[in-house]
Length: 118
Image (cartoon, rainbow, N blue to C red):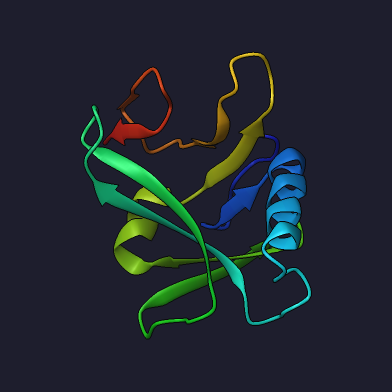
């Protein structure tokens, strides 16, 4: 992680921020303050749990709301237990990985970086 995580949050790297802003621009929601990045954890994937990313504009009663590096991030409480102090990264290298999470809570992850176990 690019910084020491001490405040139980979800973090966004500079590269991930740039990609999120580009995708929001492409979806024509960049200048709409109602929209945010929703991150979550769902069952499935080769390691048992998978990450989910999407844009949303509806905050639910038990949602946890964070802002890091200029990006508003919302997650449900159950997912946050798996995502605490995780950093969203983006890779545009030769492996074409895309978004991935640096998750200190994962005991193992799969080769694709899209699923993990705790």
